[in-house]
Amino acid sequence: MNLKKLLYFILIIPFIMGGSCQKRKFEVTANAFLNKVYNIDRDGSFTEFATISDREIRSFLDGLPKDAKITEVTIKALSMKVTPNSANEVTGLSFTGLVVDAQSSEPIFGFEDYPVPLAGVNFPLVGLNNVIAAGISKARSKIEGIIMENEFGDFQLALEGVPRLGGSRFVADVHIRISIQIEYEECREVWEYLDGGEECDL
Image: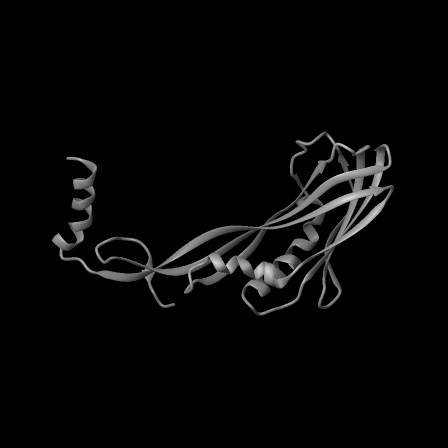
């Protein structure tokens, strides 16, 4: 039996068995990322700012089914990656970062004097969860509220760098990534004789 005939056989099985479609509810997990890039070319210490808008955060919903019901939002990790340019002179520096709720001006989380040795263009993503553990729950609550459209407002990100080793000119791209996991329920049409899913009540 060739593939075309096999596919035809699979497709007509439900009709042979007299089955019909019904909607069942399934739980689904999706991963999303918030990325900000600082393009820095500075001599000596520096401070850079960026904004993550509620529109950017809510853009995750564009890829979800229209009838999806979000049940949980979790911040999995905050990471930083530094990609030095060929003109960079600094071989080591420390970063201090702060994330603020732009609507209330309330600090959400931060890290201070985090050392970063610059090992070259393949410098990997560095996890910062251990230095911001106290603020993760605040950020999770805010992002969850924005995604569920219960809250609005932007995040302000401030990043301060202090060269520690090498020259004073720092030329690099600094990537900040927030990894988010979204759990949601959706209804799918399945053949009634198939197992899986609960009765759809969405």
